[in-house]
Amino acid sequence: MPRPITATIDLDALRHNLAVVRRHAPRSRVLAVIKADAYGHGLLRAARALKDADGFGLVELEAAVRLREAGYSQRIVLLEGFFEPGDLPVMIEHGLAAVVHSPEQLGMLEDFGAAGALDVLLKVNTGMNRLGFAPQDAADAFARLSRLAGVGPLSLMTHFASADEARGIAWQVDSFEGAVRGSVRARCIANSAAILRYPETHFEWVRPGIMLYGC
Image 1 (spheres, helix red, strand yellow):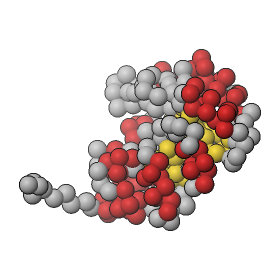
Image 2: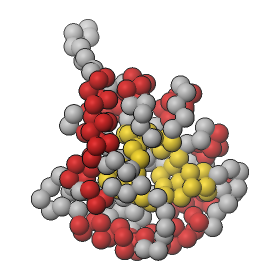
Image 3: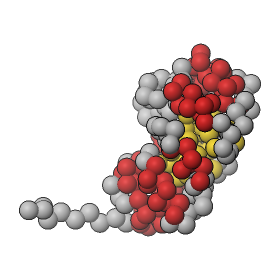
């Protein structure tokens, strides 16, 4: 028997929290993270509340297609990219962006050819140790992606491991800047904690996640 539990979602609170992001990073575009069914808040419900965001970040290809088919024209980024070559035509058809974080993904793109221009974000692992190219490998990955006719816009990103801790982020910023030095591209590195605490990381894009949901 289902448990009689109800969650009441305040969409005005989501809109308010997006406005807080704008106040803290007024010169940056906002990629609102709505992965995992918007952290359980409901994908399309959250997207409606956050419709003024410049883009959305998700993990599941099916959810990204659903969002696009619901009429959202913003940039939609798959934060874990693609997992098999068959994902690529679907992403191009729906105008989705992919985070490229592994040699396997890079190889799939090279084998795919120039069937369309895919919006790509190259992810550098600067210490989160979850996804991304090691800093010493990032320049080569960037060069290989830059040579591909099937890659359109090419951006750069990383993920902070300690933006909400006393250790801070300077060590990761230094690692990121060293890895991508000379690569003049849009950057997306500020997560929720960095948006609130480190304005020097507010580059072309910021990437709020849990702060949109009151955490």
